[in-house]
Length: 55
Image (cartoon, rainbow, N blue to C red):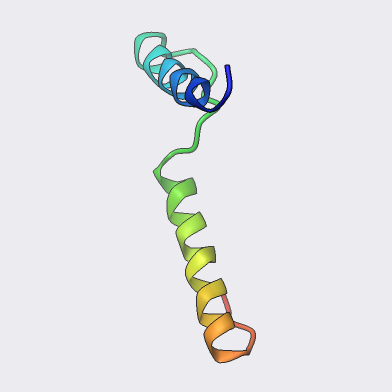
């Protein structure tokens, strides 16, 4: 399906998990997104300072 299909499949999985409580959840939740942002921020700080940054 290509790029547009990724969005279709993502929303399909999300809505299925709402309708079927036991359904498999193969999508990122808020905690995963927050962790990714924390890692990205550390990478930007490290690049700007030229030093290792703790995460």
